[in-house]
Image (cartoon, rainbow, N blue to C red; front, side, top):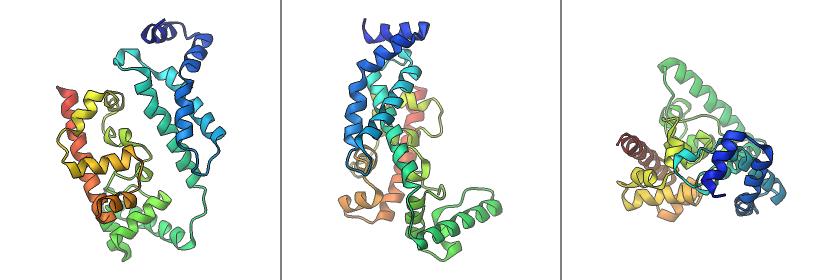
Amino acid sequence: MDEAELFKTYARSHDLELRNQIVERYLYIAEMLAKKFVGRGVEYDDLYQVASLALIKGVERFDVSLGIKFSTFITPTITGEIKNYFRDRSRLVHLPRRVNELKLNIRKAAEELAAKTGKQPTAREIAAQLGLSEEEVVRVAEAGAVVSLDSPSSESERGGDFHEIVAAEDDGALEALERRDILESAMKDLRPGERSVIEYRYMEGLSQTETAQKLGVSQMYVSRLERKVLEKMRANLKKGMAE
């Protein structure tokens, strides 16, 4: 039975044995992705369990009418679950006392500014409020995931990967974005430097600091450029979906 028929049959029957057969068929993807994240402080068995559960949920969610292969759909799904697992663990790590203090101050300042202006404050506004540099505010926000600033670029700020960030303003865009033609459409107008930022940040998983070192620029430059690039990609994505 080919892939399309397999999922159509399961969608009709919801047969548990058939679901298990599908999971076993694609279990190699969970194994491969779990191994990719080994060496980052988490045992392979734990990563494999997270990946396997994501695979099962993916089988339940997959819609064959999307017109894409299951492997194309499930790879970013499992990767996202593993990254979420790492983020959840990182929040349990004890941060230095000064970082904790700054984290609380930034959260309080963000709440006060939001109440005063009626909108989410930018990193620059929070920095001015606290007498800090904008870079320090961004760095603490990334370390402690304390507040969503105006730059929806950091994975720790938005709690998602590249696909989720670009598709944030459209509930149906994540599935569409997994189609290669839509992704290419979203990136079609990017200049070489802009494309490099996206590739380093969301395809290679580098931090803003690591990306800045690769490009020979400052971390704040990467933060600002990344925000602008994602806004451009959102616009391209919406345009591509409308056509």
